[in-house]
Structures are given as structure tokens and as C-alpha cells.
Amino acid sequence: MSSFDRFSYETDFLYSLLLTVTVESIVIYALLFYFYKEKRGLKNILLAGVLPSFATLPYLWFIFPILFIGNHTLYVVIGELSVTLVEGFILQGVLQIGFKRAFILSIVANFCSYFVGIFY
Image (cartoon, rainbow, N blue to C red; front, side):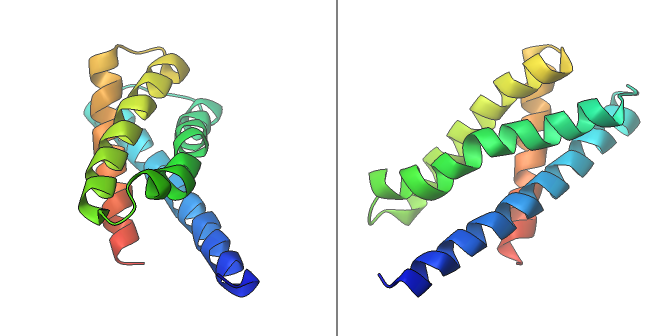
């Protein structure tokens, strides 16, 4: 792999991180405000959108591909399930909500960011 290829992958990762944080922050805000009728401050919403992605996306991009070399389907399924579970625990702590609600937020936010990411 040339240094240019490596730079390209890292640039794609940073773009993906920005896209993920943006989409998941909007989804978390929308679900909390419109569905659960909970008002949260901007700081809380941004922390809930940023912290889980910063904690999990590097593993999904740099560690999981090594573990699942040659099996893209397994990589996506195990990776997304793991990320969703871990982010649920993070959201539970950041937002001070029950795990069921945090897990629902995580599922919907991750689905939306994955779906948007497919088109970019």
C-alpha cells in the first residue's frame, strides 16, 4: 500500500467520522425532542453525538477489518452490532437514561448514519 493510498483511507475515515457525528447528533436530538418529548441542552446533544462515534468508529475502520479479513459481510454485521451495543452504553451514561432507551437511540442513529454513508 502506497502512502497515497493510506492517506486516502485516513481521509475517508475523517470524512466518515464527520458525517457520522453530524447524522447521529441530529437523529439523537430529533428522537429525544420529538419522540420522547425530552429537552436537552446543546452541550448534552453534542456530547451524545460525538463521544460514541469517537469511541467506536476507529475500531470499526482500523481494527475490525484486520479481524475479519476476507469476510466483508461478517465484518459489517459484527462491527455494526458491536458499535451499536457499545454506543448504547455510552449514551446511557452521557444522557442519564435507561439502557432500553439508550439502545433504541443507538440503533436508530447507527442505522441512519450507515444508510447515509452508503450514498456517500
